[in-house]
Image (tube, rainbow, N blue to C red; front, side):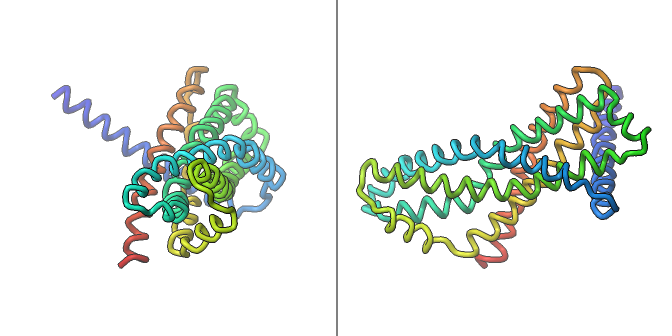
Length: 260
């Protein structure tokens, strides 16, 4: 009986957490359309989330593109299909690898940062002070961060994909002599709208999940300094899990809509 009670308590906490997240999302959604949108804070968050993450995304994407080419080349060379390297790289990078890797990098950097920042504000009662003074912390702290993440993650993914293709070009020329014009031509003409559009749309949901999880975990952190670290850690884990769930759903929908 004791074990059963513990399991029921765990399920109750899980369902209560889901309910709290839906309520939090409802508050976020309502405040998008309320008056007094904080444009200056939104622009600042775009800078913090987008520009300050560009170097990390760029370096990772360049290495990822080069490694993909070096890994793919022996397999294609065994069939005499080295000329398929640009097409294989561009399709795999843009469809799946680029969006997912970029989102995971941003989940580690952005979601943890938002969770720790809002968690520290919650612990030090800054959020309570904003509510007492008549300010709207949801609109100022949450809406701006979630919308900034939703906007900047797709842009970072596009930049990362382009840099990854550049890394692939340099890796191809380690063993072969491929001109930049020929490489770009093969990459561009191997990509269809059914490759780019679903990948771009799912990055929007990646950004929404990353921003929302970070804000929810930080805004609802418990009292005590150790809760700040727990909020940041939980934000990374939860956002990463949501990225894989969204990606699995997106792949299935893409298969149904474009390849059936």
